[in-house]
Length: 568
Image 1 (cartoon, helix red, strand yellow):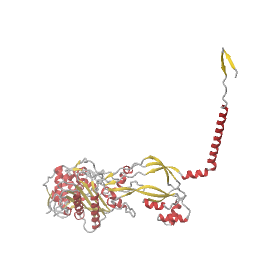
Image 2 (image 1 turned 30 degrees about the vertical axis):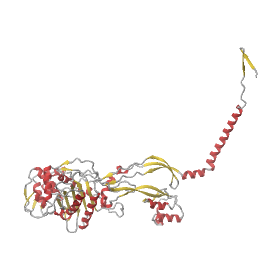
Image 3 (image 1 turned 180 degrees about the vertical axis):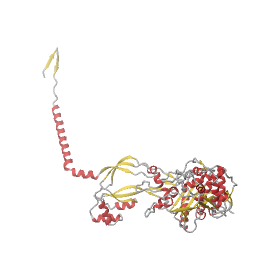
Image 4 (image 1 turned 90 degrees about the vertical axis):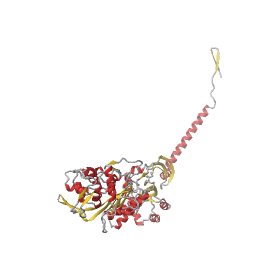
């Protein structure tokens, strides 16, 4: 190479590497070949292999699948299950994918327990759709036997089904869920948001038959529903239902109600209703069996109200504890109405008025009070107001305001006519007599602490009436069948005429008893109502009082309440 000289300094010119041109050519060739391969692959996928890939894409679909939330369990106060959710399988089909082969369709229909005609008719109705139920809420084993047929177009869906171990015993209280596990009646409806929880979601790949190919992961975990602990004691509930059912059958009655409250807390220990139904098998369900009569139905209570009216009389001061009332001649005329006793009892003290259930005695005392005295007392005892249990449709009853009341209206209110109450309201009112004058609101849930009671009667008057109630079930009274061996009990009978199309009937009654036990230290309040007994007996002391005796005695022993009365 030539050298140049500048300023006496010489420099050699650079020489180009001999491989530079070859490397560039190599890279260019690689890029061109890769481009040809890529174009060819795209052409292969889009043109030649497209049908195959399309079918594979259709067969394996990415889906977002709901994860069912486990519905919360309902238990009694001791943790015994009353409502639980069990896993089940629902089978469904895409009618457009079902086989046309006659043998396969016959086998599927037989496995479903359907005739071929019924099966074909059902498929025909859904032929333009892509979804139809085959069978809801099957046991996993039964569903698997059908899935083992491997019939095209048949798929499964995992769900939960509600089961009620107590069956008809507590059906109206618990209520039911529908086939989608949503509460429809009773506490299942009241506490639906709490019990239901929140479903989760997961990402999966399934084949065209709905079978899981791969689980890609959980998007959101399912949150199970909360557990609901009720106040009822399942042991007492069973006894209450058994005795109520026996009484309704014995007296050929239309139905009946029994409510038992804890006298110290207001918690409902038992709530039985007849007629009833089996929530696990609702075929042939009589709609009357759905009603929780103890909370949603009301009735005129009759003479069981006399102790509560007597509280207003004693607190007013118009008479004292030793007062005597002349009830002769056994009837009295008021505002063109005649008020009658069973017979002429003559002079009666306050205990005698309750023992004999004298309408005349109560009326003469009530007419000495102000127009509003008894109304105010009933109002303090929670009558005419919803009991606040949270049960759907609970009744407030009727307590007419004292506006221009006639003398006959004031009188009849004192012995339980002219107002309406539910069995729960009546039991709650009697807790004031059992709890030194403090009324306890009823609760269907187990309480973690003592409730705030509502003062309704002075302690002295409440204790006086408690002792009078004990004499009302003495051996010589109409309430004697309420006695419980080994325990001091007290209560009041009621025999209430039902209202017909022409007014009060003379051949249809409600038999009622409200009682407290034991008198020395009250633990339970029980109300029994038998609706329209037809077998001859209809008095509260003959029909309802024996039910009180049996259920109360067994309950006291189950609760380990020590006897307070020596048996002679």
